[in-house]
Image (cartoon, rainbow, N blue to C red; front, top):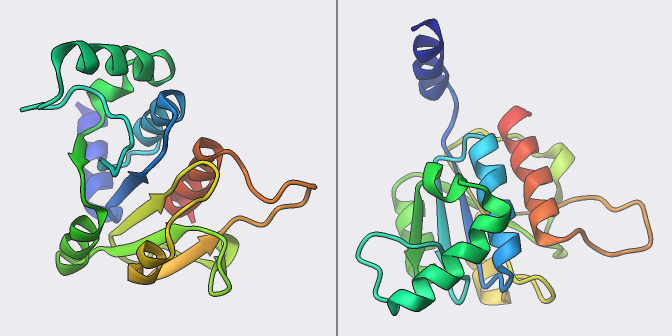
Length: 177
């Protein structure tokens, strides 16, 4: 009972955090993102573009495709696909506009000239974080629609983290900073 009360209080005090997974190809990355979202209390996860998604209500895909994709996502999600609210939204531009109109700040995790170091960013409003395709990231027209762009500083030879790892770092930072 005490846990339930603490959980309700926490949800009232903490800003809402949502994740948009855009054009991510790998079902394993999607599963990892769902598991991370569950662990960090992400309120809702949107899959946009060609991102594979688990079975959803009123799913229009052929049943064998629903099952095959859901099985692959489950391998890394380990049930988080059932505990996190998931929504398939084919058009990310419509989704971004809806979220902004409802008071969310939309933040792209992307290396751009305008990107702020995530270490310097504090979550002040309800926020939707967008992560993009594993190799090419987010399209410039999507980035242009966002309120902020954030990047994670890299210390090694590589230019970026895997999308699921980068999202985990960013979501953890946004949740606890």
